[in-house]
Image (cartoon, rainbow, N blue to C red; front, side):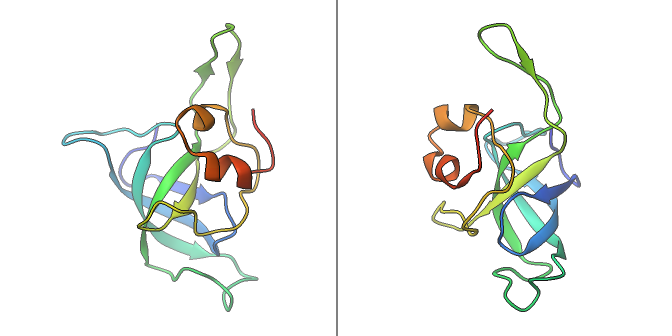
Length: 126
């Protein structure tokens, strides 16, 4: 579960390496975000190789989609799956992804939540 001040990895190639959660969207007093939720983030670090070609700047404020969390999730068939890290993909104001690839797998829950643009950019589904 993601909350304010959480440090997250960026799972796309937008140029950001780590971001900090500013606000969880989707309700007046909502505290936690899980898979498929939207949050507002601030860029903390940029990737070293792409500082000149980066699509984002340090300190920039963006919306992001949570694509991986450490929390366990139970599927309908009874199996559990657990991911290693908390990661997000940056999006613009129209809801389109900023990056052109999503690194690492993403869960099938995002496909059910109508985020097909992110599913098509990812390497694989869990």
